[in-house]
Image 1 (cartoon, rainbow, N blue to C red):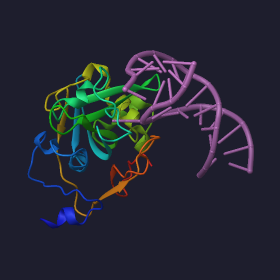
Image 2: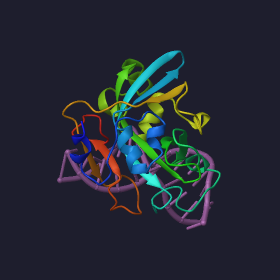
Image 3: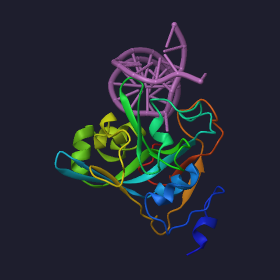
Length: 204
DNA sequence: CCGCAGATTGACT
DNA sequence: GTCAATCTGCGGG
């Protein structure tokens, strides 16, 4: 039961004995690894939607690609708060993306949720998206569209409904890979995108 | 299959 | 004024 972290690429190790959100108070990379496989539980219009996170990216204040690199602002303030809350941003004039805040209070770090596989409410998710299969959830903005996540949930405590996270380990045989992040123009070479290798619901 | 343009708004070191 | 942690549809090979 110790062998887990040694088998994964990258330098950060992951202890399995912490619960959300205490497991996210370390580095963004540690938090990212711990969020892989977690369940996102959304109550929306009386329905219960559950998805399993399979792709994430780590960002923090020391990273030129991070929204927090230039310090605290009105837009990014949630990232500087306690771990386990929602940092949601609006981009390209029409999309929302969600991060789970990480680290200690006062340090701007978080984990972008990029892709997930549906576990419950698949029909509703596919109907909301007008798409079936992986394409309904395999991208950060798609994920938010599928689950009805927007600025109303900015700063939301993710231990509470209507949007909650429960940590969950990987399945036997699954393992984590670290790759370059997607869609950024700075610090492109940093391998802070973490995926469940080979999962069908990755964004690519 | 691939690549690219257009959409459309707000934040801004 | 610029540009963005994106997605989609369309046109070409």
